[in-house]
Amino acid sequence: GESVGLHLPTLSVQEGDNSIINCAYSNSASDYFIWYKQESGKGPQFIIDIRSNMDKRQGQRVTVLLNKTVKHLSLQIAATQPGDSAVYFCAEPSEGRDDKIIFGKGTRLHILP
Amino acid sequence: DTEVTQTPKHLVMGMTNKKSLKCEQHMGHRAMYWYKQKAKKPPELMFVYSYEKLSINESVPSRFSPECPNSSLLNLHLHALQPEDSALYLCASSQTSLGGIGDGYTFGSGTRLTVV
Image (cartoon, rainbow over all chains, first blue to last red; front, top):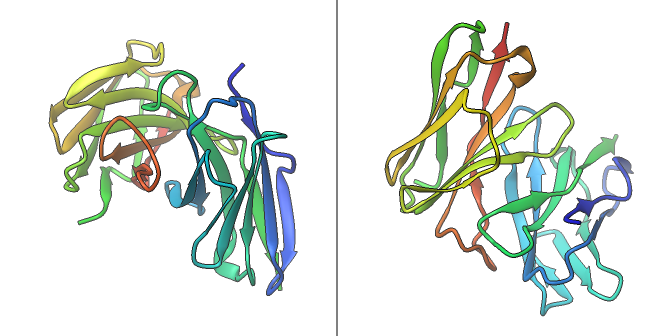
């Protein structure tokens, strides 16, 4: 069925270290995937997306990797900062239509001082 | 203006009340969305409007009634809600109802609704 899941619900990372947030998806026909960041009391904020014909895409301090063979997506955050504390969701379009986005369960990133 | 504005930010209502949530964007986006988010859960889609027409209703109870008066405004009318409807209600918009690279949704900060 349609599902976008995450391996770990909570991730604690030392400030300054790199963070890796993982996501498993089920719809092998998805054209693209999106990562969102949701800080406490705010709506989800678009971070980066990647098309299914790409393996890697880089943004500012963030890199998304896509492994279609094992249907795995990851978000890497370089030099994690306190402001990176948030819940991170991966998302993909619903099977058969892309005006509906399905969110994964979310991973809470906790930054250790 | 690159924001989606939602009002009110917080709302407490009784089970017999009628209230409305409002959402506004001035980015020229022609698709607008209502999501419901319970604590520690991902957002769940409720409704999609595309070019001011309702295109998706995710089997939402009729006590939630969406309205899209024009391409910039989206309302959610609430009537006879239950305590379990307490949640964060998020509005979002996108350039079209077709997503794609760089065409992520823009979310508002949400309305925190408590039904008593």
